[in-house]
Length: 214
Image (cartoon, rainbow, N blue to C red):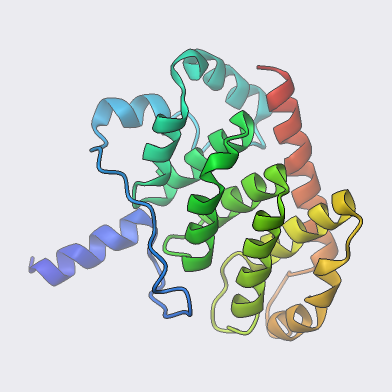
């Protein structure tokens, strides 16, 4: 196997399934200098990345086992690894522990959209923090990716996150993106915005339950 093929397989496994260019290419993604080994993955990644917030009881059970060892540096290490599994767990932990200091890391990750799946976690964390800075990240994301009809990323979740923050803040930022969203979604199946909003609301409620149980 040549190096190019090997690298392509590695990227695909990490979640970089779609290569694309964007206005955010010049932004620098945070990368952890610490190497992630098997033991780290077994403790901090495997119990959480496939469980997700939907399995609230299982997530709480796993989280309680590691909470005493969790800190912001471990969370940064998760976010700084180039893999959707580590990054989404890092986003979950950021939201649960309210690590607002990591907002810019996740905001840049969202804008660059380097790996699949993790964007949902970033949106949940940014909505949890609900800062002006976080709102701007979501808006920048939507302003670009809603014009990319060939990219089916986290536009739906980002719209729902912005709606959630609107309701908290008494604003109407999401409505401003509805025309772009309707154009983006016009050739796609099952992208009802109301369903996305309901699903995001449920996830935020599950996140609240998790935080209240630990």
